[in-house]
Image (tube, rainbow, N blue to C red):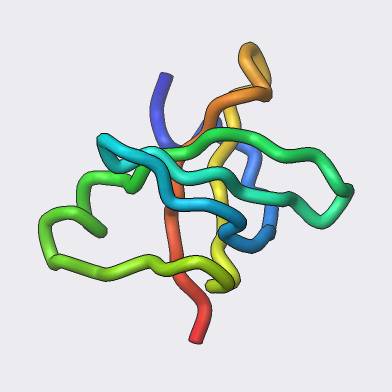
Amino acid sequence: MAKDDLVQIEGSIVDAGAGGLYKVKLENGVEIRAKLCGKMRRYNIRVVVGDKVTVGVSPYDPTHGLVMYRHK
């Protein structure tokens, strides 16, 4: 599945876990697990608790996602 097929939802980081996994609380109140996308890892974009982010969620498995963008 390509990144273009992901549904993009905004949320905020609630918890930073081990192994680069984050808990993200979405705007609709659902908490999902997400990891950083490749470009965020490549350019060392840091994400901390409380940041507003855009998460790409697969329509097939809505419990996991990719952190695509960190809002300023």
